[in-house]
Image 1 (cartoon, helix red, strand yellow):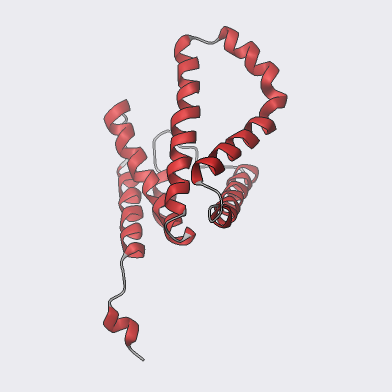
Image 2: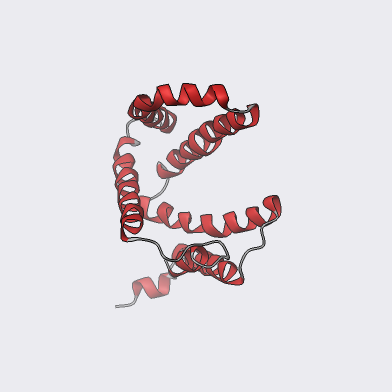
Amino acid sequence: MVGVTTALTTSDTTKTDAGFFGIALCLVSAVTYAIGVLSQKPVLRTVPGLQVTWMACAIGILCTLPFAPALIGDLADASGAAVGGLLYLGLVPTALAFSTWAYALTRMDAGNLGVTRYAVPPITIALAWLLLGENPHYLAVVGGAICLVGVGVSRRRRSTSNARAP
């Protein structure tokens, strides 16, 4: 968490005066995401990952139906690039990422897989630098490195001699 906090709170454009409500929403988001991952694990024992992802997306569509009239109005005014970006967000980060997540979750422990999420900040920093030309703050790079070291340490196997010691 130190790496994530360092990476997220150290840029020239980051507001550091986050209000209590925003922080609370972030914590609620993290808790509900964790609950979703933990409840997905038992479902994946009996249902294929692609079907679980499809069902989750279908439930998401149902939950957002009240906003459909506004979406239709906004799509009429949107550029082709904006509509393409919307389709991309629905297909790649949602469908592809969550399908591969479900695939991985069927093959490893939820806790071990959850640790790999710490690789997201450094990858985002690197891609923003390469693709968008954004120069990361040096502390963002330090935070990303801390994240990667944390993932490496948590994924390291214990030696068999330490595991057998009394």
